Image (cartoon, rainbow, N blue to C red; front, side, top):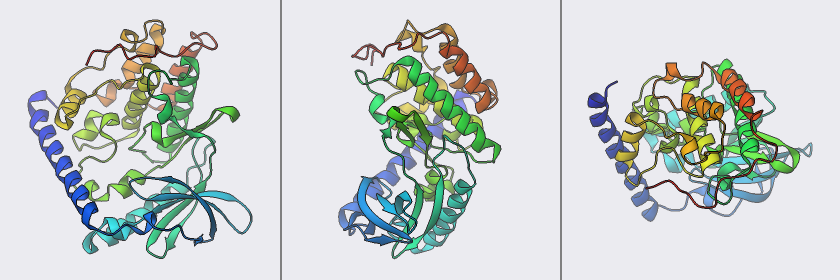
Length: 328
């Protein structure tokens, strides 16, 4: 797709995204609180709720325990609040379809889904509880992980994606907030497979803005057919951010961000981290190619390339400088 064709398309996508965002923001000012934001329930499905462990745009996450004493993270979705009557039935069907798909995934670096159901006005997914935190805290200068650790984590994510893709599952929203790590115990877990389709369900029908824009591949922005290589692009963005403390493409304007992702080559990570080995920079550059055919063929190939690059990094190799040297 040429820049001539994609420019008006990106402008249209940006306008649509901004319109929906404004609509949701306006509605949230006058609508009652969704059930997930009110006082926590004592029981959700088969799970006794112990405490709230997180809140997000889609709902609240609780720590729960089933009758056998198994701990679980209970992620709730106020579907009736998010969707009008016409869209609700489709959203509900999609929710259970995606939950069933996620339950098929069985990999040590993917959060295991136990159960899905409805409790009152809430839909919920019960999944493996992972201690620690997500990778979001390690994406800013001054808080970055050692380069070797960041690349090792990315290789494990690539392995997890390879497993999912072999099952016909594309994540569509790979980003730091969807990767949980417990560094003390060496745990890395990718979470929320398929949930972008539920949360942004109305967008699925039009092919618009399904996922997190900064991590979206050009074909995802264009509403084209997606496959596993779309997730590998997002993983490239994630690793770039873990290493450099900044995104490869950034802009205060949604339309400009989308234009940059579609048309501008990603910067060489060594322009920000000159000490990094060339094979690592080459692996990142390949992941961030505009054309899916130019990326790694699958997650296993990307994982191998990352592990080869790890061997060139000294043990305990440090994080980036405390300030972001990249001009804005």
